[in-house]
Image (tube, rainbow, N blue to C red):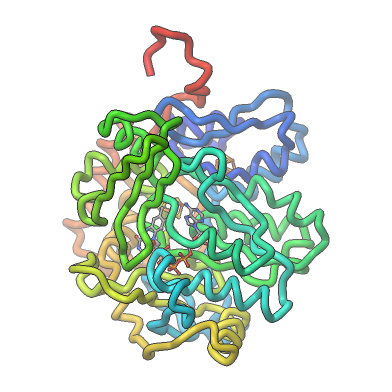
Length: 427
Ligand SMILES: Cc1cc2nc3c(=O)[nH]c(=O)nc-3n(C[C@H](O)[C@H](O)[C@H](O)COP(=O)(O)OP(=O)(O)OC[C@H]3O[C@@H](n4cnc5c(N)ncnc54)[C@H](O)[C@@H]3O)c2cc1C
Ligand code: SF4
Ligand code: SF4
């Protein structure tokens, strides 16, 4: 059982179910001290190989986004942003899509993130985009890349519903000395904002932090189990696309023998028992990219797609830097704004995010009561949001998370490498 004290080791973070698998601890401690393994459950987790020097460990405890989450409510004062209790800081909320038809079609939703990446490269503001894409060698996995051309950012378009460790490359990125932009999940962006407090080069070199709104990152087993159900193994897969080529588009898996399978978005997510979302995501205090300059989301009134459309994103433009980037992208023909949205449109299109944020303070209370370690949260208005909820809802949320904690459903086993398991060892 995880306890409520400060984590003393990476294992403490992992076993408390707080690790998001971002890779930052490896960048800080070095690959000789921290290696990443894919666990039997299909999680990318850090495994300590050698002593981490005290200074490195202190930096990890200050920057790990599993254990620390920060907001940017200061943007109200510094940049005149509005602060919504649920959605955080914003200067504008817009409905938008990539102007390029091909990007819009291939991208996860409307292609806003790819269009902004293209804008950053074309305008010369950055030399590359630090982001993830399908691995060329193992198409079911994701790899981190520095995309330097339009073709490379388009290659990275689309959502990867599996583990990714983009922050493992942050030191290498900073060592280039070049300006760059970052695209990642909200927790990845949190990690980068936290790391900016340790390494001044982040603010000097990283010209934009862009996030997708995130419902949770599935473990690798979600994809692995689907391939196995189809009678194949990972080695047979030549393409694994989760969505895109339409909005939402169909998941498509291609095999070396020429066979291909497709699933609609709703089919892929129909069975909640097969979502395989990692434990930390279930208590994520910021799944909406409060630390990003721009956060992009799906725009599906009611919260789910009712069919295919041409591709749209709702975008929360949070900072002045994000606003300038979007304005430049519109002016240069990379981005099309359809219309302004009201912040309450976000509630209708992302109802799961609203429910989650409103319940979190009570969930944390329940976890604390169970002696479970919880993330340290700066900002994000969780307590104020809980006060807007009926007492009965808060009590139910607290009770539920206390029970889940006692049942071990918010914890993880120690990290171990699935590939290193001996025959007969249980997964
Ligand atoms: C795990 C996951 C959960 C999501 N949950 C929600 C949700 O609840 N609500 C919602 O509105 N949208 C969710 N999305 C986001 C949505 O699918 C779109 O990615 C988002 O709307 C941006 O669309 P786009 O067309 O601008 O993206 P694109 O232009 O296609 O660009 C996508 C960008 O995301 C990056 N990326 C893809 N997968 C990952 C990953 N796993 N880790 C880090 N970076 C990645 C790519 O490198 C690319 O730069 C989720 C995405 C993921 C990966
Ligand atoms: S969340 Fe990131 S920094 Fe924290 S332990 Fe996991 S991989 Fe390391
Ligand atoms: S739900 Fe939160 S912790 Fe999980 S992947 Fe998304 S942003 Fe990261």
